Length: 298
Image (cartoon, rainbow, N blue to C red; front, side, top):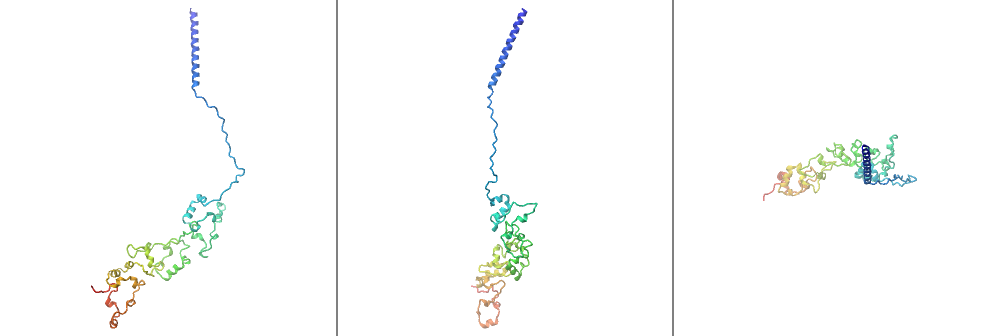
């Protein structure tokens, strides 16, 4: 009996082991089926080299344009653009040689264009070094009043120099650079002077005062008579309010030149008897003030 039981137990355990093995094998097969299918392997991509021309220099290259120059030289380009004046043309008209500077050779002066290629000596033999005054060829008309120009303005500006010498004034005592701190610059009179009357426009100054001979005052038909009030206030007040006929005439009618005191006979004949004129040789003995003549009250 004991031997038979052992045999049956052994058979039962063997059957259980077989069933467990079959179960595990079935589970593994199911898990494998649930996995996504793998994509088929792709062959490695081949790198195709770009085809090069047989001659790498067999390419048509267009000449540089002004816009091309500007990409590396924006300062020079903008200077020419805004104030290049007659130098506002293609860069290569002057710079025939470029990108040739060699610091070992120090050949900057050799490759830079020369003013004499286009220009003669417009200011004579005395001024040969153009860049001493025209320091930036890309803005050629911007000339500073340096030591080269100070005291030499009269070589070109002969008329103003002659006027300053012939008609001395406080302007004669000043150097040209006191007013003209840049070549060609004309300052407003207001920089140094006050107006003759409040709210007077400084554009009126040169109507009477020539800049280089300011004391030679000239009047014109449209001279604003209020200008006279700046120095002759009392006289102007009497003239502008008088009831006499002299109040109907412009100051410049009698005073054709500044400072001129006319004779009454310049306009008037002898209105009185010869005896009266012989007795009173000065009209103002009776007529007192030419700017406010006595008149009869009506």
